[in-house]
Length: 135
Image (cartoon, rainbow, N blue to C red):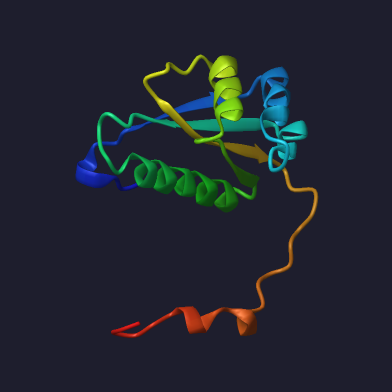
């Protein structure tokens, strides 16, 4: 139920649980797709750009909601950016049957964490990037 411009909901999701298909996604990018070697599931986020000019933002918001929901369930999750990387988009499209009328924005890998990352050090937040009233 993530928000979208004019509530057009231009996204489609392909939930992939077949391990062979998930492993086949690993070479979609030279860097940033290695998590598919161990992921137990993946969700492809595809978006219809004909529905709205805000399709990228709408899709990204939906993907972020998926990431937050996974974290809430104690799962590890990672965004793999696909859109604009023709080889990656074509591979994911071929593996999942997504039609050419949709843009493959990203693939979210899901699995169980093999390590816990330390929390952010709040003293290192970039407060200088926050501006009040004017830049």
